[in-house]
Image (cartoon, rainbow, N blue to C red):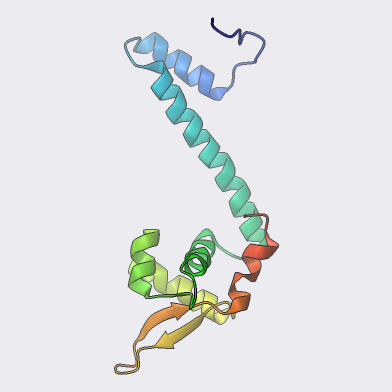
Amino acid sequence: MKADHSANPADLVDEIVATWRTELPELDGLVLQLAKRAARLTGLIDAVTVAELDRLGRTKADYEVLSRLRAAGVPYQLKPHELASELLLSSGGTTNVLHRLTAAGLLVRHADRPTGAASGSGSRPRGCAPRRKSRLR
């Protein structure tokens, strides 16, 4: 037995699906509807996330780097190229984030002993403080 959804007002996704149903009736409406709803939900969550990070003076990339380092477990270290690869950031973008977090006192960079190159990144215990203070859990 089908549920009666006539009492629910149509939303933007319903309008998009109805338009596609008119233009391309052979298109699987359920798949389109699920994809559009997932994209819409992602956009709504992203807007709230960015607003909270703005309030904390952080960017989404800052949060992702700190979160990934925290998730790495003790000693909370990953090499910059590992962070870039795992977070789908460019090497230059990763370097900028690491410099910004280091300048803010949220990250400690460790140099490679033999070469002196900064090859490891580790967060200080307080490096996770913005994450704990935020509503992003």
